[in-house]
Amino acid sequence: MNNPDDSLVPNAMRLAEYAHRQRNHRRKAPPGEDRPAYFLHLAEVAWLLMEGGIRDAESVAAAYLHDIIEDCGYDETALAEAIGNARVAALVADVSETDKNQSWEDRQQHYRERLAALNDPMILALSCADKTSNLTDMNRLMAKGHPTSSFTQRGFEAQRAKFAALDALFQDRTPERLYRRFQRALAEFQERGRALV
Image 1 (spheres, rainbow, N blue to C red):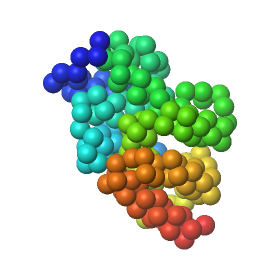
Image 2: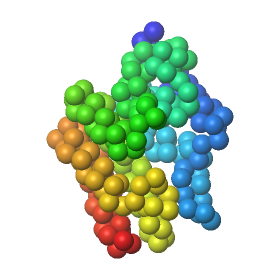
Image 3: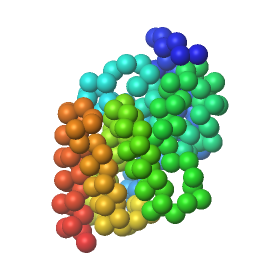
Image 4: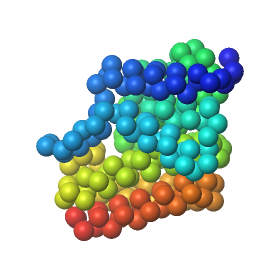
């Protein structure tokens, strides 16, 4: 079942696009702003990993699929069967927030604790790419004058604290180029957010 071949990444792209399209997922945005198809976020996460030097098929496939367990009703077993690769499914499961019944704050804390306990460079890199993409998207909206509370569940301070705590996990454990991108996006987020508060 762990047989990466030339079709793994294209198959992951197709599965991710289909699963998120079936749920009609779009990026969050304030009223009147562009809400691109969710697949754009998935492609950006994969690109960030590759730009950071992580180009193996399993990691790139996991980048495209990283939200499918969290958002599309798959579990690790179903994903492994659908994609034909248990390692990809395990990577996705490790970066997924699965207990939506918990408060946002508890989910964030458990997510950080799980990442710290796993201390797996690939999982940390995948999470770093995801969070970098999220920050980049938020920065785009804040540059247009929208406060974070207009497009996220929590306001600026809660988001800032979440990303700052992740920064400590990513530092010295993720590819340098990827981590620098995360740091720049976080610095811009902090600067823009303080200006809008």
